[in-house]
Amino acid sequence: MKRNALSAVAVAVVGVVIIAVAVAVFKLDGTNADFAFSLNDTVLYLGVGQSYQIPVEGEKKPGFKSYDKKIAKVDENGVISAVNLGETIIKVGSEKLELHVVEPPKKIEISEKKLTLGTGEKFRLSARADDKTVSSEIIYSVSDKKVLNIDSNGLITANAAGKATVTAETYNGLQAKCEVAVMKAPEKMSLSAFNSKLYVGTSFDLKADFGKNSAAKGIEFKTDNADVLSVDGKGRAKAVAVGTATVTATAYNGVSAQYVFNVSEKPYYIRTDLDPSKPMAAFTFDDGPNAPTTSGILKTLEKNGCSATFFIVGSRTKNSNHAECVKEMVKNGFEIGNHTYDHKHYGSDVTSQDISKCSDILYEVSGSRPTMFRPTGGYLTDKIKSSCGTPLILWNVDTEDWRSRNASSVYAALKKDIKNGGIVLMHDIYKSTADAVEKAVPELVKNGWQIVNVSELAYYKGKDLQNGKTYYSF
Image 1 (tube, rainbow, N blue to C red):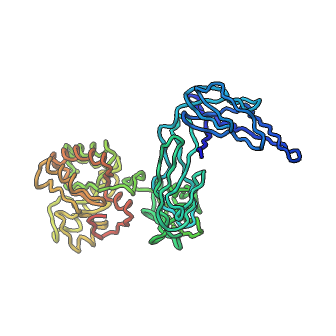
Image 2 (cartoon, rainbow, N blue to C red):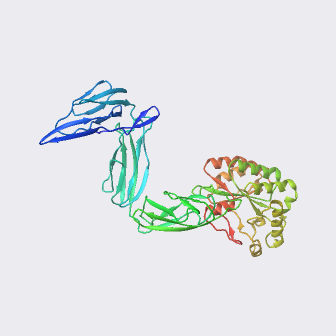
Image 3 (cartoon, one colour):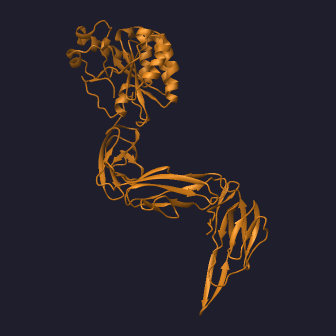
């Protein structure tokens, strides 16, 4: 049996013309069937090698003729075979069909290469040939009909748990495949996001979980307050304004879940355009600022769309050039942290004045207070925990730049030891560190890393930072 493929679009250099399909009209008189066929100025496009059955019914059929058999042939049953590129006329009884034979498809694309459905779920898979040629009918087939069925329009019906392969094929044998896994229909659902506390401007994807061995592709998302939080049909949400909104997700079989979001204005050091699904690490710099090296690090980070947290020694801002670095940090959205006023005391020798005096001078210089504290030398005490007034930030990646003072060693450590959710320790007072950062950051970004400050890392990892609590990573 021949595959019949009617072109869905006509390609004329750039434009697309919708084909008017031939209409068959029948008149019945007693037991005799008289055939009348009207083409209504129909234009048909076929690819070289493609066949098309002219729709005829009844006992009496019209005659068929091709005006140029080098372009296309037509048999006594009205089956057209496109032979070569060009244009010709196909005569059908007293009517004429204008036929254009164009290049055959050279590739086929399918909307999903992998798909997971729940039992009883329906999903329309779409496949198409390349746009620059005729768009021919796609023939769909499935490897295991016990698992799923697919109709001629690509509509899948999941029948039973298991795996099957759907194949989409053009008339000239091009194929694209989709691997389909069918699981149990969901009996329960939970809805999650990277953080329930959002900042205005943040966009993110809602995620639904159905428990072990259950799945659903088709989920409807609705928000009860689109003025605060918008959400589209695929679960892409955006925090629009300050307020509270509840999102409800409903699976194809009626199982549903809700999630409540609180939206607030973002702090100056939080960016809302990061992707929580991609790897990110926080860069932190201690002991500065030191204008010649700190300014270079700031430029590298800004140029590559990155951020960082700078744990500042307050007394260093007495130097006007160093103070300008702090102003630039705040102006450009970098985060400033407290590293005591003069870095002279460690552990139990650190006083509350060491902490408060640094906070005060940073506020005087930049108009902003530090959002977190890092103890000198990393030594913690109960006194520090009770008097710092901010979260305490340590680290889980130490570049040991203070020890090596070697750009190559620091660069190697950044490339080798960086961790998703990690906090990296460096010192912005060394030229070797600035050089290593200048080399490593563009490479890390190119490889998909998001370099962030500590508060951004905590936000996108869904961690609510608490004053007096210590964090090494997220």
